[in-house]
Image 1 (spheres, helix red, strand yellow):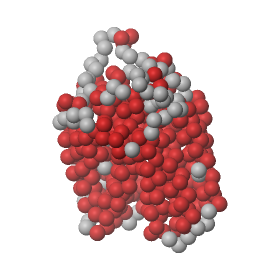
Image 2 (cartoon, rainbow, N blue to C red; image 1 turned 90 degrees about the vertical axis):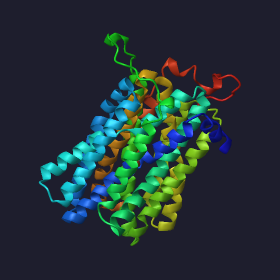
Image 3 (cartoon, helix red, strand yellow; image 1 turned 60 degrees about the vertical axis):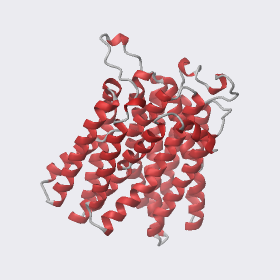
Image 4 (cartoon, rainbow, N blue to C red; image 1 turned 90 degrees about the horizontal axis):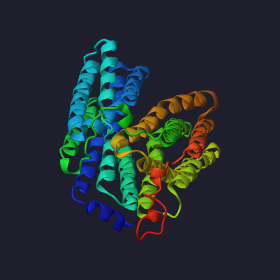
Length: 409
């Protein structure tokens, strides 16, 4: 298994940009929780804390695509340092405003600036892999590696920010996020040798490569639905743990879920697949919905942990298939933008999924709220069935690559 990863990391510069990209992504799993911990510690209100965090999330979703478009046009080395510097200043200012008990409009404005400025480093990392690697099988391995990196970020980030915020000081967790985000992004963007070339705006709009919306739009809905599934499952699992009198172990259950995804992602990158990537996307989306069904019937923490671990195996392969399909169909000049649509959908789906699940928990209890996650998986499957791949994806199928006997990829 490790041989597949060793081969892609043997390309000059790939190990460094992947590692620095992982560090640069830590804030995405730290900032929301860190804001909640800081605002609640200062104000005593979880409602206000959630509102400030939500503003950050909405602003991030609203500006991610525009920022990705600028990155494709001007280049990563020009856009990322500016964006991450603005983000660092905005987040530091937000921490000050909360500590100083500044007027709420000031705090909300700084929260919006923080979310809007945070760059989508994950999309930039994947765009680099697509630029450096020409073999479709190796690209799949690279996307699997980044899926593992994403799971690592979401397993370690919340632990770091919670430990620092509770054991050191409420601002310590967010301060660590600033250091990781700014330091990692600056190191990543400084690596010019592996950077995709910028694609300046065409003089005539007709000369601009067309976005394959028949692929990108439904894939964005797939990611939106999966985001709602994740958000609902997280809230429901915490509520389930509370009902079982084991709230402290909610993080363990969610870590088991992420661990299953991490293992599946590592396996996905090492396997030569004989199924077309679109078919794997549809199977994965169906599995995401089906594996949520047993959660409705469980009343044991031990059983819940085992089932969530198994359910996690559907996550990374589904997301990897989404990224692979987008990469194979989106023109290189708009690849970062295309991937940002998927990332934005994923982020934008978390909040409504969590909110609806919370309402169901209040009305019917924790177990019933897993229906929201099942609905998210079902919507993802419908969108996956509606996804169409353009002709551009045909030549890059691994089944048609010289010396290979498998479909992508």
